[in-house]
Figure 1 (cartoon, one colour):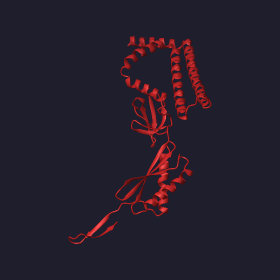
Figure 2: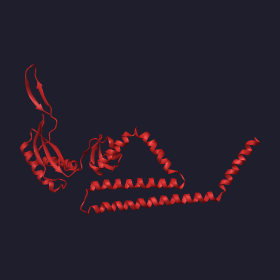
Figure 3: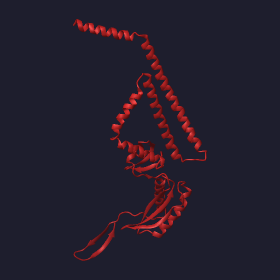
Figure 4: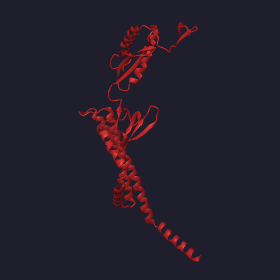
Length: 300
């Protein structure tokens, strides 16, 4: 017991001597101040760099080499993310050096370990290469509505490894770029609204077609998203109880859904005004007497 007590006492004396050393606290204080200075400097560099990036892409609008708004938004966000990663990594290295940690040895060890892990990181390399070509070839940009990897939605972020797509319901899908093998971009070119209108056999078909054509000529003046006057392509189906007419309307990108809804509404209202019926299900009932033939029939 006496031996253990003396050992504890000696240990405490050593720590007491170390903690009471003023040089230790001076070095610690200097290190803390250096860390605070490095963090403040990193924050300032990021803010200044962000403003420079915004000004750079803003001037590109007035220069001879112009880029689309979609591509500008994508490159601006990617440049800011890259700047943030580089600045924070540099700040981390400087902080480690402040505490006299051999950064070179850590990087060398990480390189050897990375070489061993690299054989199992093929998916990561594939994602980065795919992300580079997505940005370089401008396959899609931030704000585009796309369909890929079984997901449809608006692109909210493109990175070198993953892309984020927000669907109509608000879900955010994070897709590795390596899984993006085929993309359908709905935002690049004009869209087409295709609307099928059904007319009953009992109605005046030629009058219905004439009424719809007159209505379509009026619509571009009320809907600026229509590129040209919609047209009736003709009869596309002869069903058991109705005739189907198809309407085609060229619209601005991403406007084919609201234009299609507007056409359906206006066609329905105009046909109602003209007394032309939209078909509804019908049942033909026959009554028989004894074993004779059909006596009479009634449509319901």
